[in-house]
Amino acid sequence: MGQGLQKKNLLGKGSFGTVYLVQMKKTKQLFAMKRLNKENITKQDQILKVIEEKNIMSNLKCFFIIQLIYAFQTPKKLYFVMEFMQGGEMFLYIRQERQFSEQKTRFYIAEIILALEYIHSKNIIYRDLKPENILINKDGHIKICDFGLSKQGIGDNETTKTVCGTPEYLAPEILRGKPHGKEVDWYSLGCIFYEFLTGYPPYYNRNKQLMFQNRLSRQIEMKPYFSKDASDIIQALLQNDPDKRLGKNGCKEIKEHIFFQDIDWDKLKNLEIQPPFVPKLKNEYDLQYISSEFKNQVIDETYYKIGITSQQQNGNTFQDFSYVNDSKIQ
Image (tube, rainbow, N blue to C red; front, side, top):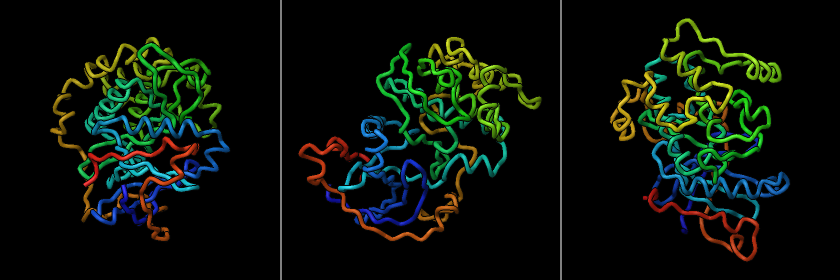
């Protein structure tokens, strides 16, 4: 490798680690870099999950999924270097707009469907679909990020049992601690669908236990301003029984729903449909769509040299972590 990265701005921070905007010194390319603490990963018994996340990301080659560029390490840290999305998070966009029209919702949900269809084709369950994990690129197209909760090796009609995800978007079978399969992603899609049209997730309540109880025992009420087709597909995606949920028999039955009758899926996949919103960017360094909570923080402009070191060899716990995506490097 031998490349160098300069840290420029803070993009996000959470229990998972910290995300920075970094610039390749030689080519001036901008990337997002997630930094994880090895000690914390080890204490939380997450070593295998982090390696799995890297393996999943390095194997997913789809436009609608954030591409991993590098994975490297230092003695105390792990780093994921990924595509940088100047349009920011869908979470901030929906909060700003309050709610989307059905036309705008149709476009975004359709692109998300293409991402999930590809993920499922690789026998992977995503398990963390939410607005914060849907990013917008400079041209207005979406890309899904963060595969920390994903599970690989799950084919059609196969299940896993780990309870994980974000409370507002959890499928009923996960809440019940039951084995679950790819259908959980279609339930989360239904939650996102509802949120795009209303501004908040279905069953939302600050009291999480009450929210879970309602999700398990009540059918969600459709808003009077929803079209018949929108109500029908949302109810089908939010079906409590995963065996009766739309998508159980594959993505094709979702794409063929009447709500999407005006979508040309081939044109959508080839980026031939104009997005409903294109970020108004002054230049490639414009960060106006990044949360001000982070971008205004002063950081040290640390320089990182990417290279294979002794920490990646000789029995190191994280020796299988390194990765280079040559196709994405100028």
